[in-house]
Image: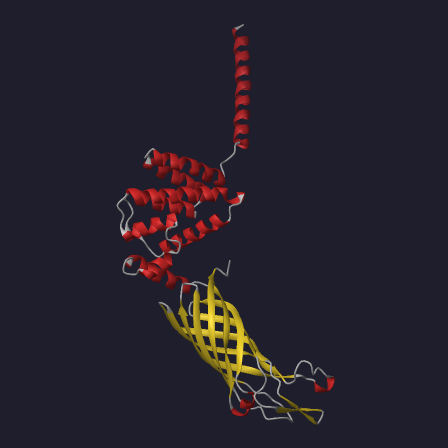
Length: 368
């Protein structure tokens, strides 16, 4: 009898154990993990509560958990920075040029969120409301140095262009002025795209002078890394020829004063110096140069070809002046070796000088 009871209990125990194992496996297989968005939303709820209760140690723990779920996202960096200022653990000595990018990104993101009030940005809108309110309280309740005050004013949007503020008051922000220069120099060493608009003048030499000087306009887009820059360049030149010229077509000479020309090619620049707001370099280019011999309304078969062209080899100097880390204006001058072969017509041998005023912008991250 006792043996039967023992076997019966053993059977029940085994069944219960198997059921518990199955339940445990089901729980393991079906349990969910919080996403970054879940933790982000929880942080916006938890951090203000902890701040109001002055539980700052718990705020650091919450930031660590947030970072585990989302990585080192900007919002965590912003919050950590504000917490260090609030708790007087912020130290100027640990700052590097990355603080400039952090402040610029905060300001740009803040303005973007303010302009885009759709439901897709409710999470970010809540964050910036929290961070700007917190920074405002810090300004009112804490004794801050100029660097800490600058950071908090960026967070409240009282300063909406931190780089301009720093450059306008270099004596007030000695450390940040140094960091801005370091940041701009670091950016210039990174791969980036280049886009420019140009306007200038083209001045022929030799017998090509009969065409006269012509205003020009154009654009460039290209890539830069370090001191090396390569651009695809398009130049257009306008106004009629200064003097008439003769063109031979089928042993008949035709007179014309037409002119609409241009250059399309690849240009390379090596910058000899690149520091602060000024840079200077040597440039060279290779492309096609040409112009219309006849006006567009004279589109007759017997006049074809209607244009003349030549290989253009050129070299010169380029000077850039930066008004910000991205925007610059410059001046470039070059000598163009060309050879227009107007066979049987007016001799057009000669080369040309060109001078261009440049308005340009560098953009980081073309490789992405």
